[in-house]
Length: 237
Length: 237
Image (cartoon, rainbow over all chains, first blue to last red; front, side, top):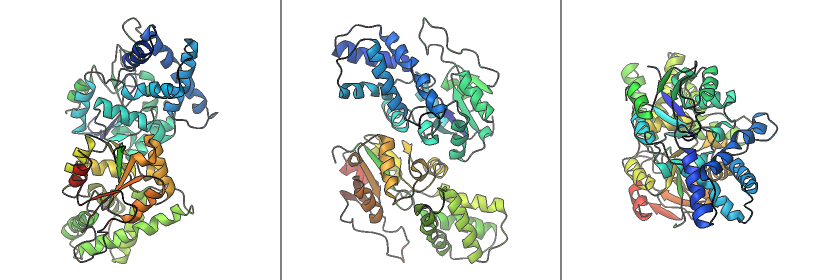
């Protein structure tokens, strides 16, 4: 770990609580503003469920690279149709789609990042596009040094190019870059490209009823912690 | 000005003092370490003089996009040859080439950016590559929200695509993005793409003997100031 120069982070689930954020935005807009009554967490899960499938044609090269904000909006239109919600204007859908720009950080994210930033370059390595990441950082106080990820590297994790090009952009050998995520599949893909890997458990990513979150680090993990502040401690910050 | 959401900055000359920085690094390495005696500011000027010509084949589409760190190194090899300095190893040249990663901010840059950051997205819109900008920010305390510029947009200013794609990355209409520079040609090119423009004079960019720095804002400038702190004041930060 002593040669680490930069930490790059998965964001959705690892840095921010997408489920609580989307459920809260859905309740504020569809509930309080539009008078609908739904299971808001189920709505968040339904929108999120379309996330990975939407990137698949791009990963397979069947669709040109498309920003996640665009995919999120396409997915939202589908989810609204699934729920039989047909009364929203295009402008309202546009605005609701920016819910992802306002996701709340986990409580330890900002304090941990501020400590890590004193010693390392810290950046995003998310499938989210640049505007989404920048706006989320401004809204949540995430002190990134650099926004990397899908739009910069023109690839979606876990494509190998996503990890390779992020390290190239930093002009660092992959072993000096610590990929940090709550998801073992992301870390396994990073390790396959020679990166160092940190696992931070986010047991509540999928809520209290669903226990599918990774709790234990997988075999490709170099260092693990229960919070960003503990990770900072372990890395001497 | 009241719809401005983001400020993006020219960096070399506008945010940092490249001439003093390069002269100081040259003196520390070639002078104190290698025992040479040169006019260090003249050396800095000679290296910088190769900057614009090196980007020209890329702007004309005759060479694939190449990071500025690579161009800087090619230029350095030429300058060293021009000075008859032939004794450096490849590793020494590599290290000296990172002098651009350590350029000192003008005295008002960090205080002004910290104020501007409270109200706006602030980012780089430089011909420098990502690693160069990130390392310079870490060394100088530049609090960027986002690193944009040549490597992200795959174009070199003043190519129109450089400005267009930066605004697209932020998902903002160009008039809501304030291009900030000490160089009127940069601002004219930004204005031609519909951006808002801010001029900040850097009268000493080329030293005290050479008065070629732009002092007055050109006709395409929307707002001007003598420092980043004055710009922050004028923008209500």
